[in-house]
Length: 120
Image 1 (cartoon, rainbow, N blue to C red):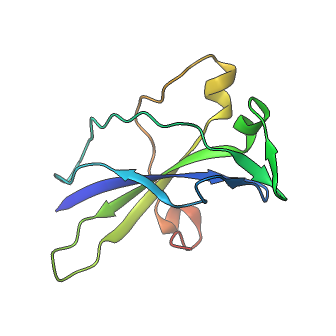
Image 2 (image 1 turned 135 degrees about the vertical axis):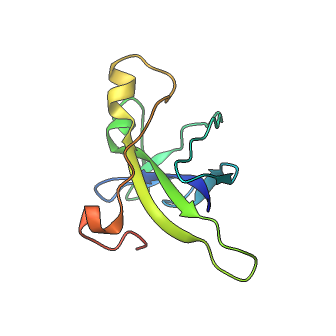
Image 3 (image 1 turned 90 degrees about the vertical axis):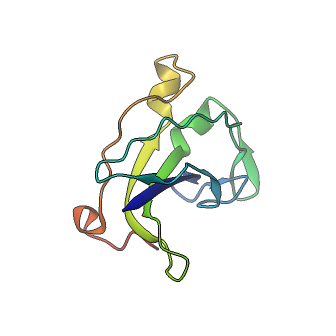
């Protein structure tokens, strides 16, 4: 089985990211493994965070901004990709601790783990 990860900005509490919430920023390579890991590296600019057409400046915006990771089962040419699960990375703790990068392992939650439909 092959799997890959997509990543997108998401904001909380009625705020929006300048790129549009849930618009994919990028994808990892497809890894064929029953226990996949990715050594993916990307540099992303922080988006404008807005509410009611007004921009929220950083560092306040860090409290509203998340990076969503979605893990997908890569479908064959005749099949669609299927969502396996998601992880949500809050950026506020990174900024308050002085970190400039995200590096680590993240717990992926399935639809059943979350108790809701993760595709909406």
